[in-house]
Picture (cartoon, rainbow, N blue to C red):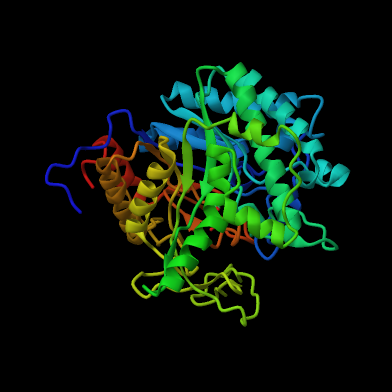
Length: 473
Ligand code: BG6
């Protein structure tokens, strides 16, 4: 439904853009930083994390561009191994200084810093020492890392995100390290439980140390539509959402496992170990808001028990049609959506899906929401005039923002929007071949070129949107 007199975006709406540390900073072994699991395991078919967009050395130039764009806020992540090269213990002075300087620069330019504590980059030393997220030892180390951040940066950063895309970390092989001799499914649920405890503990600490701040997770969600109105498909889509989304969000907000997923875990011997006090800790650490990373919706159909189990095959090359859909016999199987256009990476472009999802999250959790990621990846080159005509991106953002405005009119408490990403960066799956949003970085996977920054057409478009508080949509 459209409204006759829709209200505008709120006056204090956080017009923002996002990035993450290992994808833009580079300097992966500089000034005391140690390596993370992502530095070591990122898809080696593309560029590595050593230089990426060289933001570590060029952050002032980048913040100047943010200011020119008119950003009201900027979401970035902090690298744990830069701040604590040994994972715990002594703070790396130069590491923390980098973030203090970045925050200072942002604030001096009138940009609100939004900080993500953990965006996939676990210090590799902790992985080697005790198996990283597979051990409860990490809960104390993560809490210590948070304590260091809140102590040094708490005064100057109001909005914090605990963990980026907890659910997706179990999908991509290079974001987590698994023991190949053990059941993968059991390990995932154990690690997920431990990660949720770490998230909860960080919120408890935050309440003590940064009482005037706001904190929440950044969740990656691709909602599942039923392939048809066959009730079997409807039930399959609900279960797909339960496994892929609500397992995580119910834990974050209500501190309990969904009964159907819990029963599945018990029946399949994959339930995590729950110790006394775990669920109380989680339930007592309700977030202030939900961060939502939304790129696409998915379609699922019922999967008969006779089918063979299949994992998702990710399209990492940008060749349309390379995606292989997941099949979980007896539960659901993925499929494509005939009504939607797809990117070269087969991501289904679905702005209305964002409105549906925002309303769904609002109805379930009654919390304010900020869109922490949303955008379109594409292969891009400079024209002879050194320009990038990314009209498809302008369309993508425009259509998604229009649905955000409708969602606000529906009653969703949406308070910010962070397109992914502020500038070209190392795509998690596809290197610099897949570029995102407003600023072109002049380099390729194999050739560093001059790393200069060039404003894309979408830069000027977004600037206008921000200036008019969304009225120019
Ligand atoms: C999100 C991640 O999953 O999607 C980002 O938080 C990532 O780190 C983004 O870059 C886009 O994914 P990709 O694979 O295109 O880089």
